[in-house]
Length: 268
Image 1 (cartoon, helix red, strand yellow):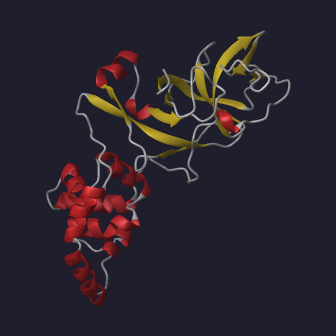
Image 2: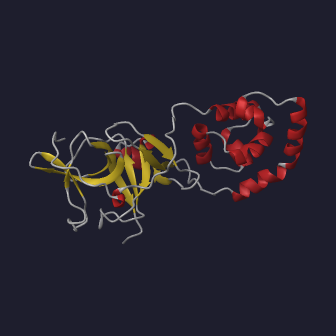
Image 3: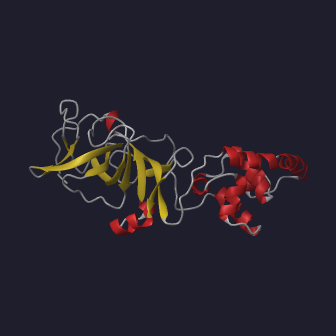
């Protein structure tokens, strides 16, 4: 990438993907609450699909809990399914005898909650083993920092499923793809507000003419890279160059996050 920049451009909200104002998640380690819950249901002879069915959630919700923890409104249901107190789920220690009597009363009433929870949970139907998901996510960025936080939005937005051979043919790893929703008109007529794009986090080699997700001074922008007179530029597809001018991209303010490899659009 070029080493100079003539002048920075103003970041436009029209260029950014939708994000969530949450702390970055560390998905290298399982959350302690989820770890205890998994040990408990496995001790009862349950596998994850049976536990998910009894609690009334989908597999993507359980995967999300393993990084974020168990939602408070789900604790009574989970407690009833694994036959352990909510105190034990949260702290690893059982409640006192007096507290245990109160908890038992709550557990006696929660049987109906389990069934109700199953009916109310978003029914994201998984198509089968021949299809693998790409999860919707939001990025947490800092200006000039190569790393990022990633917050998956599985409880609100269903993942996108692709055939397994689509990954293998293209050399993609499912865990290294993330989907993001476009906002604004800077990339029309190729990308419209509301379109979904899939970003390959493993592909950060700049390519002239390709579209990338980029950390530009702490914001996520979706732009087409162009090579002009020895410099990389961020280019909008929108023909209105007064509103969306091309700008020089230098390595100190432009950090490639990944290449856009797929788009899903309702525009025809």
